[in-house]
Length: 158
Image (cartoon, rainbow, N blue to C red; front, top):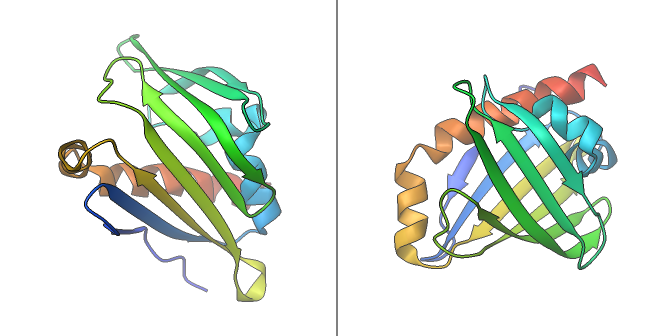
């Protein structure tokens, strides 16, 4: 099957949904989304390095990522896990240290596809329509394509 590009939709005035097919079993995709040793290998834009990757994968547990940009500046991202149903569902809050427009809630659903692949749908609920629109206008589709391309490459290598 040819890997489709990432599709983007706006299910409500505060949400953005990203959908992507991966040629990998969903248990492996779930691991790549939650295990620090795998996250370090794909998470973040090209040229950035995930220098801190802490994951306390339990309901009420937190995560903290710090990514170093090519110029050396670190950007932090935090969140708290609200729901964990391996390997099919992950819900967490999320906010950024250098730009905090309010807390977002991210819901990731992994669905089995014919042939053993996985459909990933990641829906982010933003604190307002204005924040959602700012993110959409900032190049979210291009960024998601790059990020999910790196995830695709990692999954193919495992």
